[in-house]
Length: 369
Image (cartoon, rainbow, N blue to C red; front, side, top):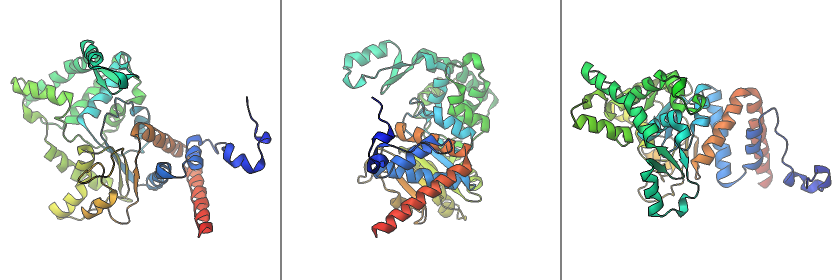
């Protein structure tokens, strides 16, 4: 049964009838209307500050941990890269390769929505099917790992013969750009690796050895088929990041948007204090910080550390806009990116809507005082 607005008492309409989206900004308006408290408020405020920063010429650096590529973050991250909302990346080796797997083997993935109820025997059957489960989905061994291996290993061997040295991601950039539509099973518009490669986006892959292709590369080095020196080290990644950060932080500065914790986040955020203390050179602090994480604050946990702790390491300052969203990144990140893409398509209208929301919040706070 449909209940029309006219049938609802006037005093209750603001509760039961969310306003229609204004100016073609349905997701932004949804956030403005509904995200008032708790983690929702953090999402709203982080979104507003993100848009303020990039709309005024600032840049944003993303750190992506976990298995976000297998969770298809590329659906929103790829267009955000192409639309200039993301300007640099730090990703795990797993996220790097799994973005490629989703592009070339998407139709062969299997989903397991009932994974919580699996027995050891159930997972053994998945192993026997040559699938590698990641929570509720699985990567196909032959169509993903082995198919990519046939292209990537010859690239490593050729580099070994020529004595070439490259960063880990550069091999993947070249590979994904070489692929044609005949290799695509996933939508190339939803492959963040392809989007980043097309823009030659600054990227670091710290700890890339801890990935499937890191293991595969190690095996070929052990067998004497490749030289370990063809892949530049993590130390060289930091050296490159010194230069990348100087460029990214020009003007209004560079913000830091982090999903999860661990090395994907800790490695790049350290570039600021390292330039300041180790190189003994002037550097701008990070201009914004937001982390989406389900890790609770605990003793000694980097993933669960509050942003204030980073002030003591000179990564952030007391004036840095800081946000912590304690939630599931697979839910929050696509929502936030979708709202930002709306803002990018209608920048003046979005800025006006955000200003109206802030004015209403300020007025409400004034009444309470």
